[in-house]
Amino acid sequence: MRKYFHKLAEEEFKELVKEGMTWGECAEEYPQPKWCNYPDAVQGALGCWSLMDFRIKGRSSCKCCIQYIPATPTHKGERSVD
Image (cartoon, rainbow, N blue to C red; front, top):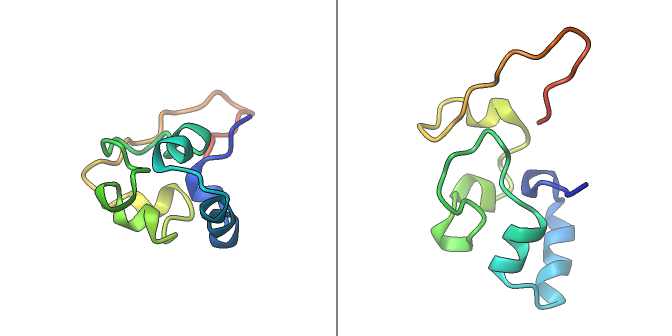
Protein backbone atom coordinates (compact mmCIF):
# COMPACT_ATOMS: atom_id res chain seq x y z
CA MET A 1 0.00 0.00 0.00
CA ARG A 2 1.31 3.43 -0.93
CA LYS A 3 1.88 6.12 1.64
CA TYR A 4 0.12 9.41 0.91
CA PHE A 5 2.26 12.55 0.83
CA HIS A 6 0.55 14.09 3.86
CA LYS A 7 1.60 11.02 5.89
CA LEU A 8 5.31 11.59 5.15
CA ALA A 9 7.34 13.12 7.94
CA GLU A 10 9.36 16.15 6.87
CA GLU A 11 12.54 14.24 7.75
CA GLU A 12 11.51 11.36 5.44
CA PHE A 13 10.94 13.85 2.64
CA LYS A 14 14.35 15.46 3.17
CA GLU A 15 15.94 12.02 2.89
CA LEU A 16 14.15 11.42 -0.43
CA VAL A 17 15.48 14.76 -1.70
CA LYS A 18 19.02 13.74 -0.71
CA GLU A 19 18.52 10.50 -2.65
CA GLY A 20 17.64 12.55 -5.74
CA MET A 21 13.93 11.77 -6.05
CA THR A 22 12.20 14.06 -8.57
CA TRP A 23 8.79 15.66 -8.00
CA GLY A 24 7.29 13.34 -10.60
CA GLU A 25 8.68 10.29 -8.80
CA CYS A 26 7.51 11.67 -5.48
CA ALA A 27 3.96 12.21 -6.80
CA GLU A 28 3.91 8.65 -8.13
CA GLU A 29 5.24 7.07 -4.93
CA TYR A 30 3.50 9.41 -2.44
CA PRO A 31 0.27 10.69 -4.06
CA GLN A 32 -1.90 13.53 -2.84
CA PRO A 33 -4.76 12.65 -0.49
CA LYS A 34 -7.92 11.23 -2.08
CA TRP A 35 -9.96 14.19 -0.84
CA CYS A 36 -7.73 16.64 -2.74
CA ASN A 37 -8.81 17.74 -6.21
CA TYR A 38 -5.93 20.22 -6.63
CA PRO A 39 -4.28 19.49 -10.01
CA ASP A 40 -0.83 17.93 -9.44
CA ALA A 41 -0.84 18.84 -5.74
CA VAL A 42 2.49 17.04 -5.19
CA GLN A 43 4.52 19.10 -7.67
CA GLY A 44 6.70 21.36 -5.57
CA ALA A 45 6.22 25.10 -6.15
CA LEU A 46 3.39 24.42 -8.62
CA GLY A 47 1.52 22.14 -6.21
CA CYS A 48 -0.49 22.74 -3.08
CA TRP A 49 1.64 24.94 -0.86
CA SER A 50 -0.05 23.75 2.34
CA LEU A 51 0.72 20.15 1.40
CA MET A 52 4.29 20.99 0.36
CA ASP A 53 4.87 22.83 3.68
CA PHE A 54 3.72 19.78 5.70
CA ARG A 55 0.75 21.68 7.16
CA ILE A 56 -1.78 19.06 6.01
CA LYS A 57 -2.21 16.37 8.65
CA GLY A 58 -5.60 14.99 7.65
CA ARG A 59 -8.93 15.66 5.96
CA SER A 60 -9.90 18.40 8.43
CA SER A 61 -6.87 20.47 7.36
CA CYS A 62 -8.40 20.89 3.89
CA LYS A 63 -12.10 21.45 4.56
CA CYS A 64 -11.93 25.18 3.73
CA CYS A 65 -10.14 24.61 0.40
CA ILE A 66 -12.17 24.93 -2.82
CA GLN A 67 -10.37 21.79 -4.11
CA TYR A 68 -11.62 19.68 -1.17
CA ILE A 69 -13.68 16.58 -2.04
CA PRO A 70 -16.17 15.87 0.77
CA ALA A 71 -16.17 12.43 2.37
CA THR A 72 -18.73 9.93 1.21
CA PRO A 73 -20.70 8.01 3.83
CA THR A 74 -19.19 4.64 4.71
CA HIS A 75 -20.98 1.42 5.53
CA LYS A 76 -21.38 0.62 9.20
CA GLY A 77 -18.11 -0.69 10.61
CA GLU A 78 -15.90 0.71 7.81
CA ARG A 79 -13.42 3.50 8.31
CA SER A 80 -12.90 6.32 5.87
CA VAL A 81 -9.26 6.60 4.80
CA ASP A 82 -7.44 9.87 5.56
